[in-house]
Every structure is written in structure tokens, then in C-alpha cells.
Image 1 (cartoon, rainbow, N blue to C red):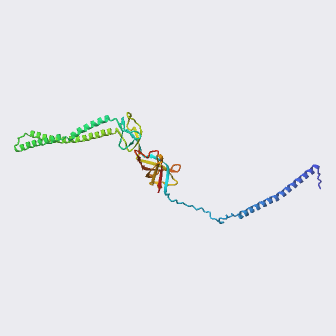
Image 2 (cartoon, rainbow, N blue to C red; image 1 turned 135 degrees about the vertical axis):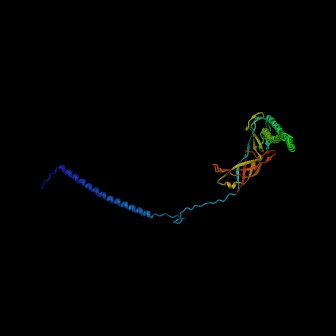
Image 3 (cartoon, one colour; image 1 turned 60 degrees about the vertical axis):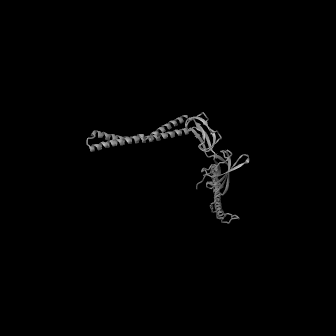
Length: 354
């Protein structure tokens, strides 16, 4: 039997150890039920969530069946073509042709036969370029042509050559016949000379005919020179290429012009174009192409004038605002000596849509 000697320090150490062991046991005992309770709670929550997910059902609307079909059905709307009339306001009157009339020859403008604002007809003389030199050149060409014509018509050389050939032929034949009847009447050398003279006369006939052909070709060349001189003279007369109104003069009398320099400007006035815009969302181009259109313009003191025409091929370009350009060409009318339609006027188009 052993005897343990316990000091005060030893008792104290044992007591502390006992207390620590007791506390650790207590914590473990308290923790295990807590974990168990937590695990049970989580399991119950999962089961409750499963039950709630299964129990949840959508509440049907009062006006719809509980199991309504939600399939989307695509539909196409077919719109009938627009018919009737459409009014295009604020249309613009524009000129169909604006012509810059040039000088075709260089020279000094001798005179102007038209002023700004004058109505002119096609072929009317508008200005005259100095043509003194051109007239002299024409006269020289005409004289040369006349000379060539005389030579071409001159048959004297041809007639003489034919007659001389016949005489030479007769002389040769007589000499040959004489020697046949009486040998030695004409020496052989003389007979050969007569034959040579006859042959030369034949060549002279051919030469005369050739000279007439050359004279005829020369005449054609001289006639062409006359026509060129006449055209050069005519090009110094500036005429109106079409019916219209003189709206601008670029040159005055006494000024120099070169070929191609514009002398005046003419605007065609017997026909005008009226341009407007249509909404592409309302009318397709094929609905208005060729359609009848009535154009109305406002005149002074509230008066109105109407014109009729057909819509030309619409512009293929659609503008940023969704509109495309259409136009109508109409025959202009006169009031007195003045045309009614003028470029820049505003008009209204009433189009009968197909």
C-alpha cells in the first residue's frame, strides 16, 4: 500500500482539471441536441417547401377557362388598293427645258434681235455675229464652183477627139486599101505612120472622156465647199432652238464671243412640268403612274386656272420623310401674249388614283 502525499498545490490542480472536464462534457451534451434539433428543423422545412410547391396552383381568371390555349396565331391583313382622288398641295411649276443658246462661230456680236422677257418661236433670229469674211469666202467658193461646172459641161474636147479619130481611121484604111489594089502606092513607112496617127486619136478620145470625169469630180468638191461656206455664214446667225421665252442675256452688241460661249437663255414655255410629293405609306407608285391629274393654279385677284395631264413615271427614290416625287406635264395656255404657267409658281394637283 502506497501512501500519496498531497500538497495544497496538488489539490488545487486536481480541482481545476475536474472542473474543466465537467464543462467540456456539458458543452458536448448541449451541442448535440442543438444539432439534432437544427437538422430536424431543416428536414421539416424542405418537406414543407415540397408540399407547398405541389399545392400551389394558378388561380384561373373569371373570364377565361382554367386551361386556356395561349398559342399565338399570325394573321395577314390584305388591304384593298386605294381608289378615288388624292390632293397634292404646294406643288411646284418647273420648266421642262432650259436652253443656253451658244455662239457657233467666233466674232463680234453685231446685233441682238431679242430682249429679256420676249417670247420667241423656234427658228427665230436672236442675234447676228459679224459675217463679212464669211460672205467673201462664200462668194469665192461659188465662183470656183461655177468654173468647175463649165468645165464639166464642156464637151468640145471630147467631140473634137472623136471627130479626129474618125478622120485618122479613114486615112489609114484608104492607104491600106490602095496598097491592096496597087501594091506600093503608099510606102510601108507611111502606112505605119497613118496607123499610129489613128491610134493616137483613139487615145485622145479616152483622154477627153477622162478630163470630163475629173471635171465632174472637181465640181462636186467645189459644190461641197460652197455648202460649207453657206453653213459657216448661217452659223453666224443665232436662232431660237425651240419656242420659249428669253429670260437672260449673256452678251451685248459689240462684245466678242468664241465658239460655245452662251449668248442668251431660253426657257420652253409651251409645256410645263408640275412636281409634287406623295406619301409612300398611303399610295404605291403603280397606283398613280399614268393617272389623270388636274392642276390648279392661283392667279391674280383670286382667279384660278386648271390644266389636265397624266402622271409620269414616279421617282424611284423615297425621301427621308417617306415621300416620293411625282410630276405631270401639261400644255401651257396664253392670256393675251403672256403664258399663264411660269417656273416657280405654286399649284395643286388632284390625282385620280387607280
